[in-house]
Length: 529
Figure 1 (cartoon, rainbow, N blue to C red):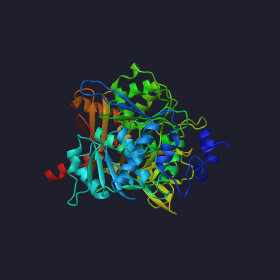
Figure 2 (cartoon, rainbow, N blue to C red; figure 1 turned 90 degrees about the horizontal axis):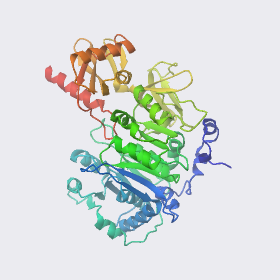
Figure 3 (cartoon, rainbow, N blue to C red; figure 1 turned 60 degrees about the horizontal axis):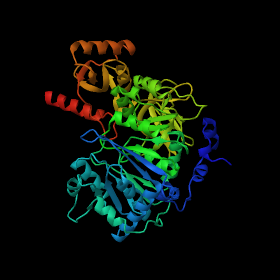
Figure 4 (cartoon, helix red, strand yellow; figure 1 turned 45 degrees about the vertical axis):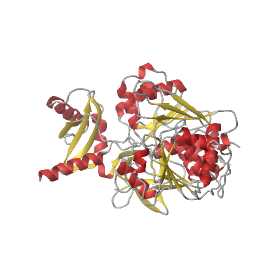
């Protein structure tokens, strides 16, 4: 009988996808399951087969290098690290935090801690002191592992009790753990906590960890099979940092659990370096953020490389039409959106690789098997096709808000219409920041832009666009952009204010951070008042 990895069509997904079928992909069961075993140990067969390819960003001399880690190498290191943690007195449920770029120590820490029953807590390497302290204060790790460069920053988080203990993942540490046995018997049950994952959102001063059990890996396979389309035999790559949900769950754990070699990026992101890696590795399946695709387009260097894709996916935010056209031109396959959050998982997908599923440009796709979503009006009734409403998810026997606005079409495809707080109401008109951004990005002189509602005494709020242009900003260009947008959208739907900037604020996950821009404008208005 075929397993879900043997089936690629949309029709098969609707007919055969179930939790029972997902469990068949794993060695563990509902009582005993360990992520490290499922992702690494069971695939370590002595062959030296690659598990992770790491493309390092260029150094100060412009030199870049690759690092290839095998299942055997990671499995042995993780087991040795687990024994080392036992020797340090680490107990089940203790948190082990690590702030490392993708590297052998990163994967050894990630999977070794989980084998002991401890909880792995990945931290973004670009955190400043405040961001790191907030997260360390929230999860209270016993050990915080980092590199030499970040060690002093990490020590600034040590409390009066001496915790967390800061450990530098240098050659000395690797030499020490190498003295321990290269096999380990996992101590976790399926429902034990395995990972604390922090979101990149900015809605709370104190971030709260999303807590995942080992059995979360099973549910993740819905996103892997139907959101990224991963199947054995793929050459996979995800440039998102594994400190965040997309890079860890979709870019690391999902492919490894299926025995698929994955790829990632270490260091400052460079779109040209990424394209070289995609060519060198013969990558056939990539899942990335919308920003990654846009930066590759804006580099103007795609003609220098050959691409080998048969599946593409993206997440985090919608891709503008101009970038979608560029993807079609250079990558020759449609980019398939998948929608979800760290808290709720992936719930809308475009089934990459399914020949019987039509990918509609700009669409979030259709619902993952087993999920139920609706676009609703404020009174809780379903919105008809084409009408924007709030995207609601049926969970725990009730409708829960995703805090996103969306619409559906007559064929049941969902479309993202911005966060609830990205809606701009000006002089009674309701406008979508995302829709205006997508239109402006079609202009030849616009490389990136972000649109928000700025306070206005007469209209309550007006549309303001922050633009990164490929030429000097001017009044003439502003008028041209305003006319361009009005002609394509509506006479009232255009940026009344355009500010030219060199860069846009981004969340650590690479999304444009409109909240920072809104806060800046609110502060200006308050100062003026």
